Length: 339
Image (tube, rainbow, N blue to C red; front, side, top):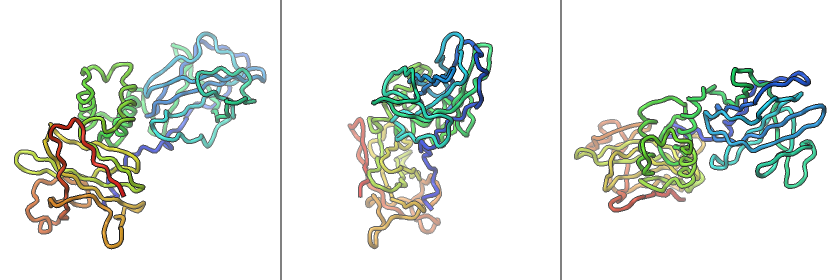
């Protein structure tokens, strides 16, 4: 069924704070503390320090995927260190951690709170995890990680993939693995934004990705799903005298997605169908909730790429009605799926 198509895997619930749990010996001093982000999310982190019964917090420290940042310089003297991390709003609501070791106060902007166990408005409590940093030649290091256990390089690539998906590019799965699909999407993003080829290594690359994720339909062709259901979509493009139909692309409710479209076509063909939580077509009376038109192209329930549409049924495919979408002279075109 179409519901079996690749999921976007964007739930921020995947965000996990996996740190080395332990306690520093009382009065133990170490040089410089660095936090490394091995999550596929851009996060803001806060640090807690407990010494002789007093606990202070400071933050926020932004960390891009794959980035390591020094959060304390000089000797680190504390009985206990704590960390808290939250994903940026571009990913959607960040869940509250279900486990941790202390509820400490955080501020709304840059903050330093000397007495962090008694909050004063607008401060609020956040769940912190106790950490025992690893000793390295460069100093102490604590890592934020998720179940995939990315290296720094893999986390950076997975973070790029995740934001490209939010920006409407088809880069699934988000796995931190190099491949032609990911490389093509990065190249297309750089081209769409008019950036130099070396932009992907620039310090502000994640800022550019976040900006694009907040405006997913800024250029090219995109679908946007304004319904409460997931939508499975397919696109047809004219290539070498034939129409090549590709699908399925899964667009979650409230999200946009940019399918793979080679070159700069003057026209393409679009189809979308809403599915429920079980992957079954959503119905309105006797009809499926779908968005198509009068041009018949072949599709099938699994992922497909088809160019022969003469007799769909005889070939074991479904005959599906696509709607033409005119792209000529338009910097951006968006098809919106609405109930």
